[in-house]
Length: 303
Ligand code: ADP
Ligand code: MG
Image (cartoon, rainbow, N blue to C red; front, top):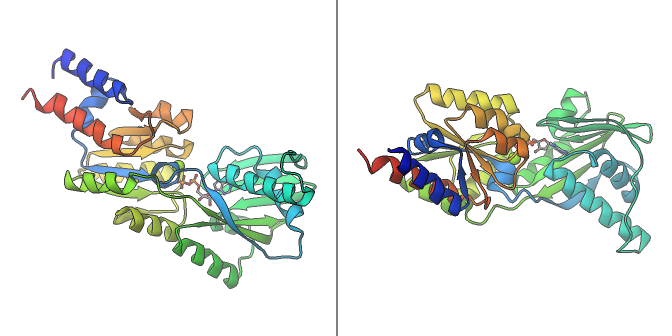
């Protein structure tokens, strides 16, 4: 393609809310035969809500949610926002005051553990919030009853978040994050273009499978840490694929860099947007197809 054609292509993209960072990005996009989607915030709204709570010890719900909210205050994860929102509601219910804002207990030693959850000390107690792998890494015992509850959530495409105080499991928060409108449609259009799709997520396999089924994807790579995501992209490339990775989080940025075309969701984190070659300003998955179409039009015309 001529430099002018490339300029026109990126210009048309920009006017449609698809930011393509230069000629190389535009050129690589039409070669893509495999699109890897992150789950949370990419295929799903990324605006999860707590739909259920299971207390496993004799603890007051407000005390429980206060400790949990305090530990999550410094997290940027969408799950943290959902949890704090829920804690706020519990607090307001207890105070019988819907407009007052709670003050959470003080936090020490906050640590975000990528792909697993958070760890902090609140009121002298070590609070862990996250998935099974976080609990196992900290030798927190998980009963078969809790396993059963996690599986039940997974079957419903929901995520069970475990909470331990001083290495003892105290509760499960069940969180639901609905699919983005248009997600299913985008996957089906890609299929008709002979482009395969897969899910790659830090979330557990059960939830990932349930989401995959809803959206029409057959290949699932779950419980992936950020480096695993990048590694998987490289494996796909080694097998001869030209890979686009679509993601929104810090945890996606190594994979966005590794991919032939890194595509960031505009509503995502700055780090993902920086790492990407293409940014979907409307955070709309159909725009993956807009980008591919533009690239095809630009590079297929002049051959
Ligand atoms: P995804 O790839 O789906 O965006 P992440 O890699 O960000 O997922 O997180 C993987 C899992 O780690 C989440 O599904 C959740 O169980 C747990 N997790 C991560 N951050 C938090 C947090 N701030 N609070 C609770 N759980 C978390
Ligand atoms: Mg994400």
